[in-house]
Length: 273
Ligand SMILES: Cc1cc2nc3c(=O)[nH]c(=O)nc-3n(C[C@H](O)[C@H](O)[C@H](O)COP(=O)(O)O)c2cc1C
Image 1 (cartoon, rainbow, N blue to C red):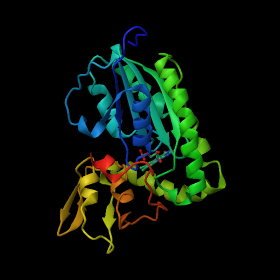
Image 2 (cartoon, rainbow, N blue to C red):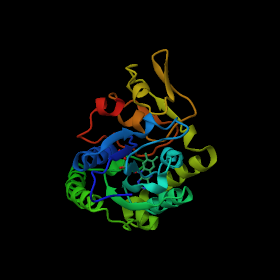
Image 3 (cartoon, rainbow, N blue to C red):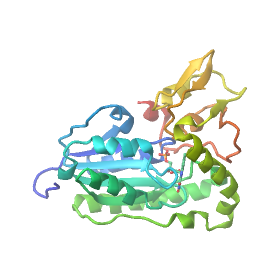
């Protein structure tokens, strides 16, 4: 457990598609002098052993919950009950109860989420076409302030704060209501076929550069005849779409109003590292 006398060892595990969560995880790692670890680098291990006293999970919100990858990886940590665990979820509309959901998973492994924070970032999912630079900039500014709050809270070893909001508020504005039909179609796809089967396609703008193959954390993309081919193991992060330099990738068959976006402080090389 967290100690005020000794120097606590901190590890921050992140999962990110368009860089928002990587930016948040990286800033926190710098502030807290923690080690930054990509979830993709440990997700295929059977068990995860660490001597860190403090473990952080930073991830985007997907359909009101943490990504499957996070929910799968957390129970793999040994001695999770002996750690101070914090989580930060980045979200586009509303954090919902995702951090409480994560807490339940940690509790089922004998531990508990000591602190959970939600950080609003530009939306990278359906309806993100409505993003605008000014609004994005104000979210980046707000993050700078929240970084201080979160890092002070963790440094002080405080517990109990788990941020949440009702998912209903996500849809209670005219712009969000406009997106509702495509959102419902997307949710139906997820319910019927599952996130792993998301049907991405590339169009004639694709020049076969292979960035999508490199950036895919699930190794779900292979280049065949210089064109990407998606298997059925998608993690739903949309990284292939957002980092395509030719903007040639879309969710096949759906008009999802998705804007191409990635966090301005995150480079492609940070994502594929
Ligand atoms: C498949 C998918 C589902 C999403 N679902 C939600 C959601 O239910 N609520 C929400 O507020 N944001 C949602 N988002 C937006 C992301 O959580 C948000 O933009 C996040 O900051 C992206 O982080 P990243 O850049 O690290 O991938 C979703 C994004 C994707 C790609």
